[in-house]
Amino acid sequence: MCSLACPLGQAKTGLCFCYLCSNKQINIMNHSHYFCPVCGFRGLNEVPYDEHGSPSYEICPCCGFEFGFEGPREHAQFREDWLRKGAPWFMPEAKPADWDLQKQLAGLNIKE
Ligand SMILES: [Zn+2]
Image 1 (cartoon, protein in one colour):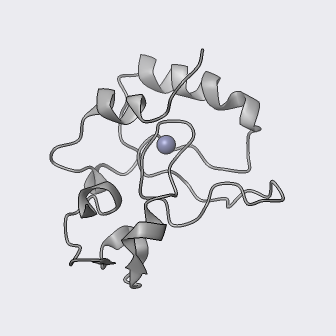
Image 2 (tube, protein in one colour; image 1 turned 135 degrees about the vertical axis):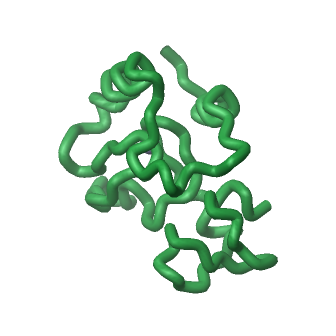
């Protein structure tokens, strides 16, 4: 189950020690909920937008989207541009060896 949240594959059972977690011990079950609404990557440190709609200002290591600098309505446009560029990783060192773009996008449930 760690492959979702720990792109470097350094997680121990139930706890994540990977670089995305800043060496904090985070329960994978909670951690893996933080996925990028633009590219579908699961492994963000913080929820992109909290219950009040306040952005985290975190940059997605996958698509490079920075939450807070563009409105939620622009997610689709950013995704389109990112895919047109060939879906490059913003932080290539965080890319899992078995990364599958189609699988990640499928988890997004895009209705467009
Ligand atoms: Zn992303």
